[in-house]
Image (cartoon, rainbow, N blue to C red; front, side, top):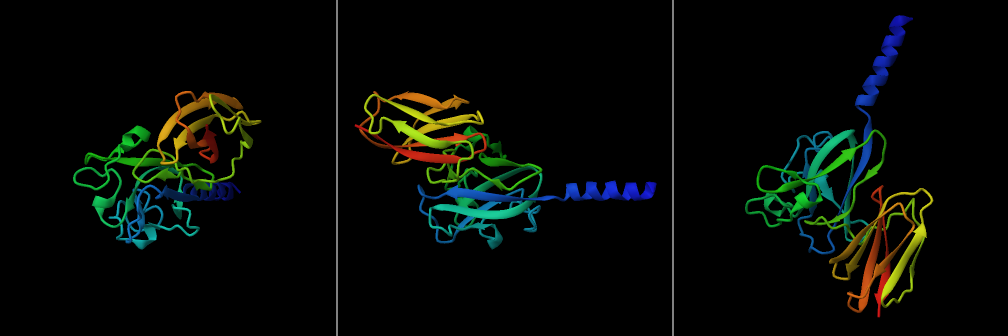
Length: 240
């Protein structure tokens, strides 16, 4: 009987080690013309996902290509990974010069250190993510070569409901209000239609916020809401 218990716990331990979690990479290419060769993701997650080696050169393994099946400019790739911390970066086309913030003579030199990136030792930075014990995991959709979150992500907000902007159109002030029964932390950001971040506020766990618009130009803006799960929603704001 004792041997049976030992084998049982050994089996549970083995299963927990090799448990796989569904992870979806997402990158927004709306601000960068996608290369005809494709959009790729590389990193130290590749071998664990069964792609036969980490940090493969972008374009050398088509299993690391992201696709835009719904034509919303957000390219995606889903893989299975064990729990742990990983690093990665996206590439617009094949070859290292087309990868994000690689350093040296690369084409894309965004400062990914400003969004928690890790120094890659070549003058650039890698993005980071964690795979928890339970999934699935959908990574934040950032603009390619940027720390700015996508304006195109339309995932359902599990903690946000009935978002209202009042008044809208607005002149001097706008009140942003929504239901936040779970008291989750939210970040509210205001972007121009060109994707420029105009203002960002940490709401904590409040369910409304007032934004002073006196320094804004007239026109249309995009207001985004991001909760602590990384889910994002957006509304249009017109300033007269």
